[in-house]
Length: 134
Image (cartoon, rainbow, N blue to C red; front, top):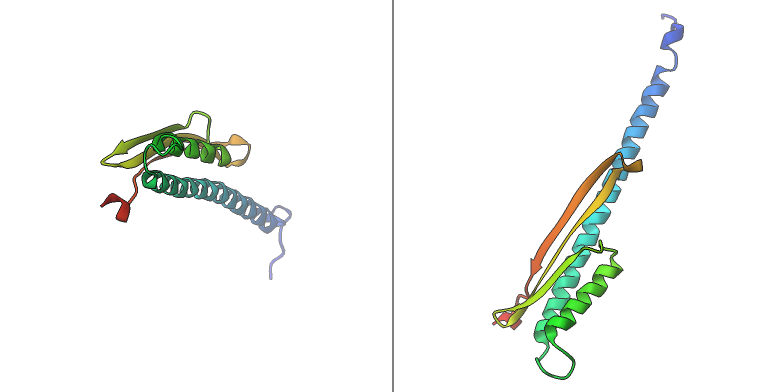
């Protein structure tokens, strides 16, 4: 068996630390990206619910315009999910149902300290489906 030279000692510990750091960075990036995806799916669900309930409202029943009600609900959801302040929310009637569109662009830090920033773009249009559209 050969003896290790001075420069060869500790190289496995160094490699282990490098691999550990790489794994931590990958897990961090995945965590941040998956949380952004979860937020966008939650907003999609909120949009679907608001549009469906807004389309079911009878117009002119004293509670306000269904378009305004849906838009207010989506604004509250945008504040709750901490969407950027420049989030574009549009609600309009199309073929006797309401259609909502939400667009925002959010910068997420995939690597710590802002080393790698990713622009996540959310652009979704939702209209109710099912028995209300028939």
